[in-house]
Each structure stands twice: as C-alpha cells, then as structure tokens.
Amino acid sequence: MNRVLIPGGRLLVKTDHDDYAEVISEVLRGAEDFVTLDPEEAFAGLPETGFEHKYRHQGRSIYPFALQKND
Image 1 (cartoon, rainbow, N blue to C red):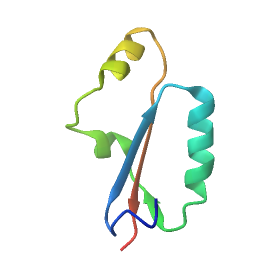
Image 2: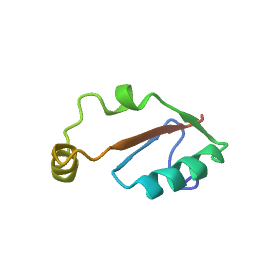
Image 3: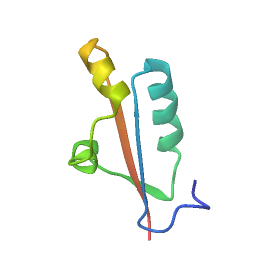
C-alpha cells in the first residue's frame, strides 16, 4: 500500500465483518506512514454500496476506516 499510494492519497475501507474489522484496525495501527482520518468526514458525499445498504437494513454494524498517506 505504501509503495503504490501517492503522498496525500487516501485509503477508504468499510466492512460489516467484526473479525475483519479487528484485523484491519490492528494492521492500520502499525501503518507508520499514514495518518488516520475521521471516517465520517472521509466518506461524506460518497454513495452507499449495495452491500452496505443491504447489511445496514439487516441491522449489521458497518466499520469504516480512513487513512491518508503522509507527504
């Protein structure tokens, strides 16, 4: 990820899977070349995916992650 993302580039990820969210969180904590962004702000204005819509209506939690590569 660090090699291919340009400085200032963003990584936006969402999942409904509890265990996957935990793994993502652990991996991102070790991402020294990235700063964590406010997911609510980072995803503002972006459309909801079909899966996200479906799973929200099923009552599943959605876990958003947003990072930006340091300059």
